[in-house]
Image 1 (spheres, helix red, strand yellow):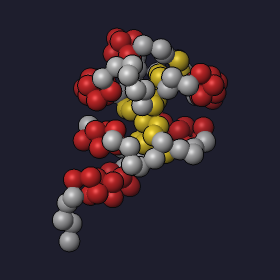
Image 2 (image 1 turned 120 degrees about the vertical axis):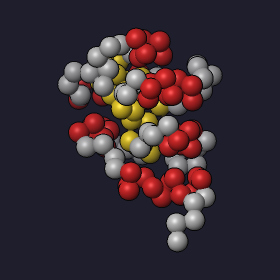
Image 3 (image 1 turned 90 degrees about the vertical axis):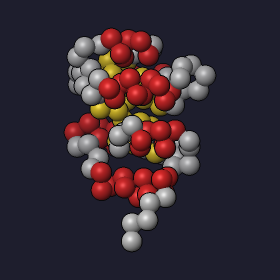
Length: 124
């Protein structure tokens, strides 16, 4: 099951229509209690809950996270990468961009440039 938790009403509805076996959720606790959750589509939702701690709990349950971010400069990108979240979609995006992440998760090599920038690896 794909859980949709973006906090953006129209986006939630559009994704729910497009993605089979999906459900819009409104509370972080529901995500953590749903036994059939395989994928979570989420945006940063400031001041609603501790985002980093929540993502850690989600990843601990081996749920794939598709994270929608405004751009590659937001601080949540670092937390996501450290938690092994590689399915990241930057605005502007299409519904198909998100659906593609469900069908074909991002490989580490495709996201490695962000990781190099964040943890300042010397890859030479």
